[in-house]
Image (tube, rainbow, N blue to C red; front, side, top):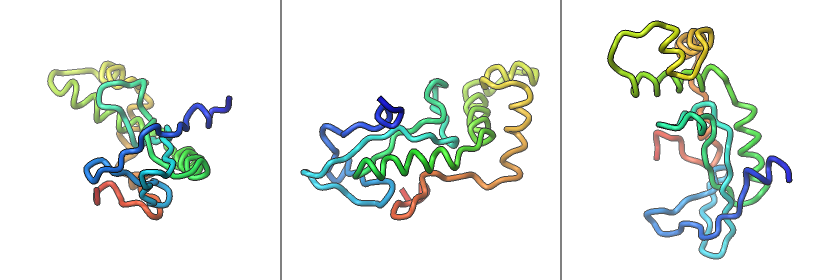
Length: 145
């Protein structure tokens, strides 16, 4: 089984009520009650899980076809920036351990980073616009949701 097969699954019961309706993140197509909908694990360097570091860099997305699911995975891979993920890990560590005096080494450890990665993560936002892998043609940007 390929890694794509591991990351892409046909959704057994696609959400279609107005409150839970989803659309393909590649083309924006809103599936009907009889259409297939695929759930895909997309690499996303802008995503750090709120509490589980094992889920960092991965988010779930919906696609209307296996081809669109594959395109979402490739887009995530192509737009991946290590420093962006490290910056997200720094944000999470700052929220989880907001008080107290820490050494750089200890804060890096809490963030799950080396001191060098911490330094690069702290410099990254000042020099780059965030990569928004979620903003794909046909899809609303995060701020529009």
